[in-house]
Length: 124
Image 1 (tube, rainbow, N blue to C red):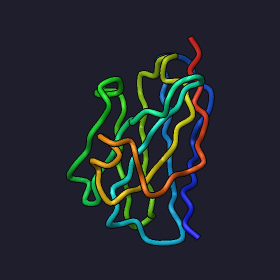
Image 2 (cartoon, rainbow, N blue to C red; image 1 turned 90 degrees about the vertical axis):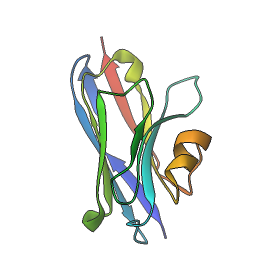
Image 3 (cartoon, helix red, strand yellow; image 1 turned 180 degrees about the horizontal axis):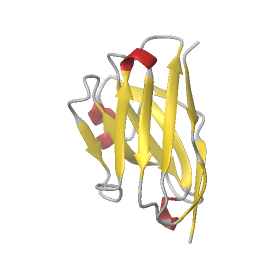
């Protein structure tokens, strides 16, 4: 059974940092693109960042460029999202995802696999 499990969410003050992790199990995801999405209350799920299987390709939503960094460790089947300079508008449930293509996530907001989500709350 394939599972993506996020961790690292929590409550942080504006300007602070958090690091999210997402461990995959049930199959190897070394050849999959990995990504992060988020969904705030009353809003649609939106793309945040994605990384290709060789880590040579990364793409970010304009709203997080320069503040968030996505990375991966294929040996651990894990993808990370380092979030710095957090703002109250970053408050959302963050979901990790996996798909064969970065473009599926960044352009079509779709993915083959999804995690259950982790809450990130940024206080002002």
